[in-house]
Amino acid sequence: MIAAELVQAIWAGAQPALDVFALDPSTPHSVAAPAVTAADPTTVDTKGIVTFFASKIAPIMLAILGVIFLGRASKGEISKVLTSSAIAIVGLAFIAGAATLFFVGEFIIGLIFE
Image 1 (tube, rainbow, N blue to C red):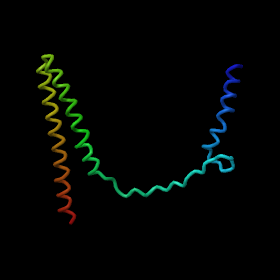
Image 2: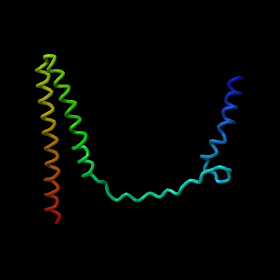
Image 3: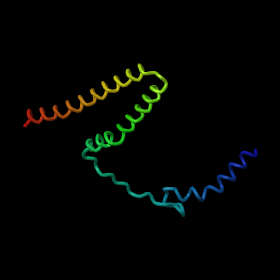
Image 4: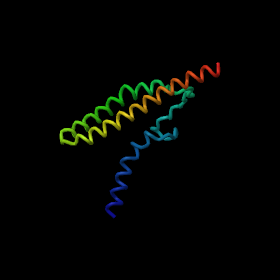
């Protein structure tokens, strides 16, 4: 009973504030919804995305790997550090190879379809 009265009192006090955000123009204090027109997307800036990841995300990830490697090396786990370092280097080689193939493939497609 007390909870119901509390909810009714809160609702009565909040109703004028909620009317301000109502999209119905017949309410006295409503705000009309602006007309939203979105421009048609034409292309995605993939070079900007790649540049962002290469300049912002990759250094942070390498720094995290470095901290992990230093932490393990300070504990005397040199074999785990060397194994993790080798895996990271192989992963970077695969990423570099994929980027190289991407540009070489683009060049070959340009030669074929010109």
